[in-house]
Image (cartoon, rainbow, N blue to C red):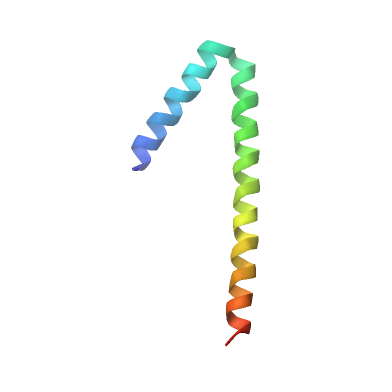
Length: 59
C-alpha cells in the first residue's frame, strides 16, 4: 500500500471517528492506537534480537 493511500485511509477513519464519537473520543482512540503500535514495534525488536542471538550462537 502506498503512503498516499495509507494516509488517505487513515484520514477517512479518523474523520469518521470524529463525526461518530466526537473530537476527544477520537483523540483518545488515536493516542491508544499509537501506544499500541509502539508496544508492538518494541516487541518485534525484542523478538528479532532473540532470533538473531539464537541464530548466531548456533554457528
